[in-house]
Every structure is written in C-alpha cells, then in structure tokens.
Length: 267
Ligand SMILES: [Zn+2]
Ligand SMILES: [Zn+2]
Image (tube, rainbow, N blue to C red):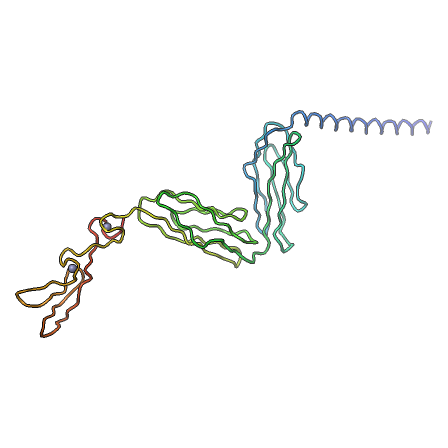
C-alpha cells in the first residue's frame, strides 16, 4: 500500500513534469510561428550617467519578440511594448558598454546599445570650431570622453550628445552673422566649441555697417579756401581746425559713417 502510494506519487510528478515540458514546447512553437519579422525600437542607444537610473524604449513589432541577451549589469523588463532598462551606480571606475538583443522570428535580431558613464576624466572634441552657411543644417563633432557630458547651446543653435557624437543644428539665418559657444560639462570636466553661422549681408556696406562719410568723402577733414585751413569733419568724428600757424584742437575724422541702409548692423 505504502509502496503503491509512493509509485503513484512518482507517476504524478513525472506527468506534471511532462505536461510542463509539453507546454513549454507548445509555447516555443507558438512563439516561433508568431515571431516578429520587424522589430523597431524608438532608439538604438541608451546612455546612463555614473549614477544609473531608468530609461524606457518603445518597441514596435509585427509579432512576438523577447530579450535574448542582456549585459549582467543591466536589468531589462518588458511591459506591453515598452522595454524598461535599469542600471545601478557604476562602481567599476570605467565606462560600461553592452548590448541588449531583442529577437523575433529566427534571424531577426535588433541591438540596443547601453552605455554607462564612469567618473569623467576628460572631454575632448575633435574640433573646437563649427561654421554653418546661411542656409543652416546639421553638423556633427566627435567627442572623446569617458563621461556623459551635459550640453548647453547658445541661442539659435541646438546641440545634443549621444554615444560619442555631438549633433549641432541651426535653421536658416535671415539676420546677421551669428556667433556663440557650445559648452560640454561633465562633473569637473568641460570643453567648449565655437559655433558661427553666416547671415544676410548689407550690399551697401558689405556687412561692415560703415560707409564712406558723405560730408568729407572719406578724408576725415574739409579744406576751406577762404580761411586757408582744414576743419576736422564733424560728421565722422573730427573736430577743430588746423592752418599753417597752428593746430586749434584739430582732430581728423574717421572718414567713415554708419551705413544708412542697415543702420550699422551690417545686414
Ligand atoms: Zn567725414
Ligand atoms: Zn549697411
């Protein structure tokens, strides 16, 4: 009786195991049948600071998929179509990089690169100057850094940093030349990149904002035949007079005056 009970117990256990096994096989077959042929995350790279944190990636797919690979320092969870990626503080002293692989149908794999900064020791842009044409557009600068820099862009420019690349954008410029500085900072490290954009140029003064003085013709002084002396041109900053007997507070004008077409702005 006792023996029979034991045998039944073992039989039950085997049956249960078999059923579990079969359901796993069924699930695998089902997954294989409905496996996604296209998996599209809304970003292919996620950056974390030294402190770590949480980032969501929205996944669009035409079937089922799963996480087939994940670095051991990353936690990845799926809820509906949102992949939540978490990291703890990076205590390793070095930048961590790894890939999360999402897999659908056989051969359909999508990679999401995960990077976590360590203590930042340097930020080195490959270029310290970026120039845009009047039409604007996008330019990139590679940044060598072991941190995750914060980016500050001047008015009229936008700049974002991701995975070693700084992307700078500016729209078309209908005004004068624009200048500024992009600042990258990470803990106690920083770097700057000068940005400029050409603009509209005033045809009358060729962008200088100044034209030849109309009163003195650019000489900066005016000759008086009657007094046999020269006067400093008052229109372009001159003053006083000078003759062969002496200099009476004479100062030559610059010969240039504010461009009347653009009011001195140059555009
Ligand atoms: Zn003058
Ligand atoms: Zn002008």
